[in-house]
Length: 407
Image (tube, rainbow, N blue to C red; front, side):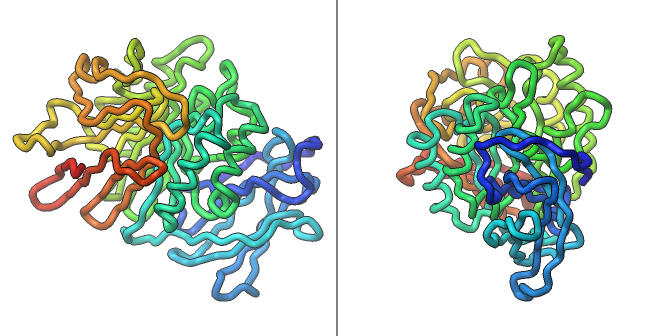
């Protein structure tokens, strides 16, 4: 992964002296490498110290780089040549007097070993009082989750340092610095046509996105984790100047097609913010659907995880129905919301474009747990009090692929 050259940047009083906001950001191969980002004010020198937890004296020092100055100096470092399926402990700082506490993470296996991950829709509003309880319920329900997938609108105002602080507090440093965060930007991560100053320093991505000049490489990427290819897209075509949905979307369409064609994994998860089929009355993302839906269907993506509409839905193309009313084939399209901001929901946009919302809920904050185990995938959507509001399984065997509702 290539990061920007180190440059001297000013710090501000809002950053703490000690490193804060540690984040694990996935590389293309999280079995053998790991990117860590953090914020502090320890000058230009940045060092990541890392060692296997079984041999803590075997410390490797990795030189980090300055990557931004939103609310304080941001740093990033990438450890390489790691051993798959191995627990590591690490700390960051200037390598001398200013260092963070030790944190731990485990590299992915190179095999398709069982694991689980969490999926969050828009956290966005009233984070401390409204969204954080749902986040903490998710972490308690799935304490061994290996990843967290975020479908955009993590905060409400793109450059609000206090809101980013609330987001980090909701998860806690043991989570932001302990599991990889697969993050797609939402429209609230943009200020006009500009991506949040916090975004890339916090979530640099895997560095393997489109390279044809569409300015997407920082927000579009893929990472492979134990039999699953996670693909992140940027659906914010309305934030381009001039408005150019064709360039913005079709560049990603072509890149997505190539990433799916070359996918060696048995499972695929794609995440982006604006839904292919909208829940909210009057909303429609026609250019996005026209460009991306054929690719998602052609390559039979397993999960398409979205946000934006502040309600819950899960469905599929009607063409993928089977004789069993609880079962279908093809991709699953989910729209969820974790924070307390809510909109009305209707299924008109689904029906008008050849799809059906099998489950649709309003005024329901949820988190989603997904467990992947060989030919089986189990998805469960829950509220903060543990109530299951939707669940289904996907099975792939000699009879093909089928998606079956279980609640």
